Length: 138
Ligand SMILES: [Fe+2]
Image (tube, rainbow, N blue to C red; front, side, top):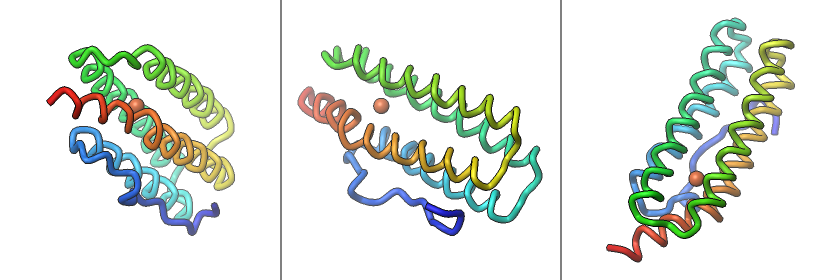
């Protein structure tokens, strides 16, 4: 990936559950906007706001998924929550690195790359399993 790459939510990531797909689509759009902001050499403050928004959005979305797991007695809730918690810690470390070193294009590319690949793997495997569980209860 370089800073000209476009990040987009593609249909292979859809689970068919809008309450989960819509925030995922929003996350990919935000990652694309962050990459564009870095490419356009926006100010440190502006990029910092975007990184912070991304972190908040991820936490908010994980909490929403975890409510669905709890309400549906998902047997995989424990490991799923643990994946979320590990990612939040990793994102926290990246945010601290950003605060210390600033928004170099290389750093933003690395951050966007890491978040995108984590999300893809997590959606394909773990969120899909959650949706199958939710649908099996309807
Ligand atoms: Fe998840």
